[in-house]
Length: 212
Image 1: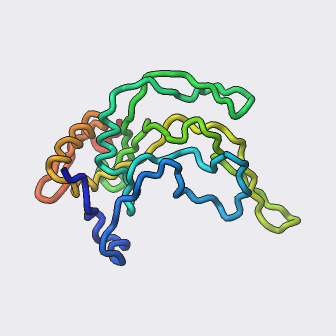
Image 2 (image 1 turned 90 degrees about the horizontal axis):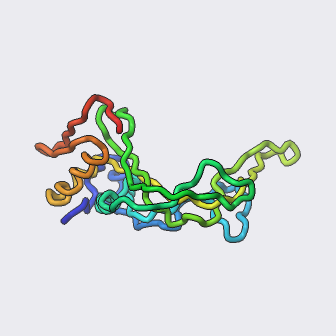
Image 3 (image 1 turned 45 degrees about the horizontal axis):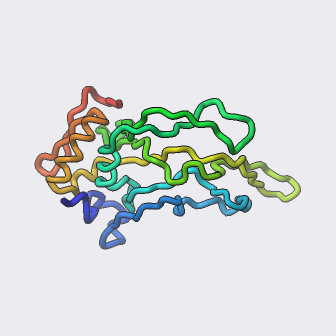
């Protein structure tokens, strides 16, 4: 079963003009690819500067989750998982958690290109869940130093879930067997039916601009 190797759906882009091929990036459970600002102060010991890990492969051009990893995520059964409660205690980083039934879900993006070109993928388990992280900074102008000074936000525990996007153009690179198992899940979770005809992706949605 071929889930989309090699990547060909982005041919014609400026990146393909300078490279012979494009690869899928390896999973990044530690979020190591996220870069901090050059002027950010050092992080406290044991604290990460970002709240998400990414336990799935991604397209080197658009950042889309790898189709097989999306299939596996959507195929998992409902589970009991931690979900951050809205009311948090004052003593960070001890955020309280509740437990509920949750699953990976798809949310629609806008149709700015005239068709449902991507889905937002929510509810993937975050490899960094519970670890202390800083996810915000503030910047102010210091007249004495004549430059902007960055201040780190307060540490807090990383949330239970991470996120991704799936760009539907990758449906073109999959073989018939892989397409045949993923497309029904896109319909079930996203409400849009995809097919392939004459080298094109076609779709059927309940209405123009439909988003679940």
